[in-house]
Length: 498
Image (cartoon, rainbow, N blue to C red; front, side, top):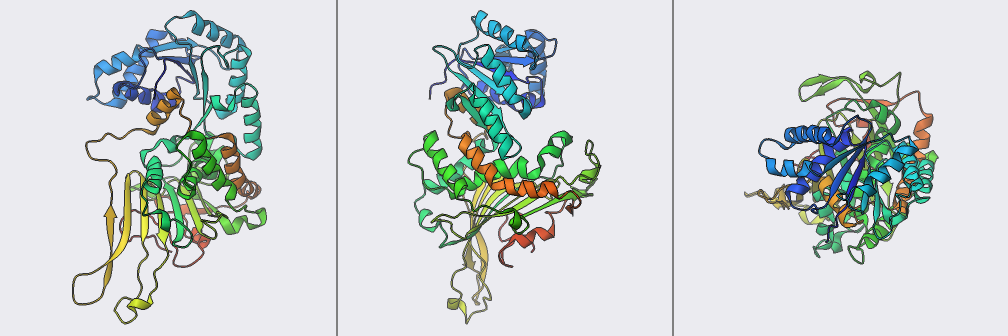
């Protein structure tokens, strides 16, 4: 697809998101030759810097992040694209000056990307300021607005934010970025499902017992208490990232891979999720908070001891849900979703367990019980696709063991792309298929909103789990049956303990 020249404006250019993700991703796209020759990057910030100062700071940061082997010529070429504009997000006059800066400089292309690397509470205000000076539309050119999650903090606030943004920008101008969807393995879910005919006949309630979607981290809140106290694990991971994974696993084949066809099918899945009434929240959702423990052999503090956490907070660092999709394909198949911080391992995965085969065939053999078949998709840290099946153990007796068929989708010599590289390139070419549409955001909030309301009223107690464990044992009560247990690793036949 054609990548047109544009000016890429970063609000919050000196912040952690820009330095940790955006600028390194753009630099790697530079190295891959995917940036248009005329692309310029304008940093908007309050620092008293000029172009040369920002370029020097970014160059130093990129040298540290990219490593010694990264091409110095690429680094030098990339930083020459950088321009710095000193401005305050709250001062309307600075937006007028920004427009003058963009229009008076012939080296800055007319097409515009505004990237909101700022607090979500500022999205609406900045969008309004841009519109006030006419930067939301440009005759003969395009304008795109990129906003990071969270898209609101509940259903009501998401609706308010949507109204504010749509007051000045059309839906096709707004790119709601969820970096999780830029990961190669996540996109590979679509290929695995729809490019392999042998899977489709099995991908339904007749053969699948249940689905697990997991994201666990060994790290804690990493000095982000101000954000995490407002968000919690349910908002931070499940409402956005993990529900998106659920839609990719459960969706019907889209008519095409065009953005609207793909997103239509994802919305249908979210709208088909069985509503959880507030009276049933405790039967379908579980939350907990990490206490002191050991991670990688080191003692770590509990959540209440983290810097910035005030008082006896009941913010959840672990959340697990049981959801049902009430459509023809998935009726009564449970989807178990969980996320947690300070867990025993770093794992992002989709685990799909098939129903047990009839046991009668092996009634007169030493086989007491066949283990189920699984499909395992590792997202991080291991990018993999594994299928677990049963095979006979060599020898005279009829015994079985689990064997794994593994399909590594990336060869050793093939570079791994960062999620932001994929998504930023999509912004530049105008491909919105991996970005969220508003009705998708709204439908996801409707799934979790009843849970948020119940948990917000329960401020006296929260379950805990030791840091370094795989979460609270009480979370197993979400399972329908005793033989349904968490997959804590991607290794063969190693489900967690009930």
